[in-house]
Length: 128
Image 1 (cartoon, rainbow, N blue to C red):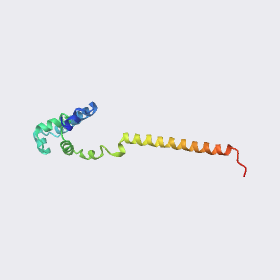
Image 2: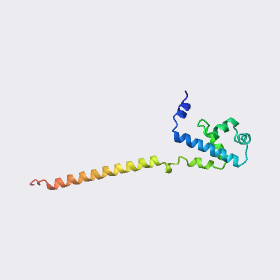
Image 3: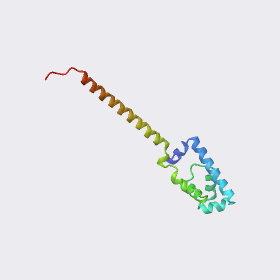
Image 4: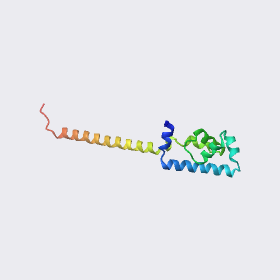
C-alpha cells in the first residue's frame, strides 16, 4: 500500500464529509452554468471519470484538479487563505497556553525573589 493510499484510508469522517459536500457543490455550480460533464472536463483538462470522481468527493482526486474546478467557478482565490497562520486556531491556542505558562513562571519567580528578600531582612544582622 502506498503512502498516499494509507493517508486516504485514515481521513477523518468529517473531512470525508466535507470533501463530499465540496464535490456536490462543484457539481451544482457546473449544472447551474448549464455545462455538460464532457464540456466541463474538457475545460478542466481532465477525463469525464476524473470529473465524476471530483464531484463525488473522492479524496484521491488531485489538488490540481480541485484547484482548476475552483478556478472555473471563480473561487480559486480562497485556496490561498485556507491555512493562513492568522486563522490557525490550534497554533493560536498553543501560543496562548505558552504565554500563560510563561506568565505563571514569572509570577512564581517574582514571588520567590520577594520571599528571599523578606527572609534576608528578617534574619539578624551580623555586627560589623
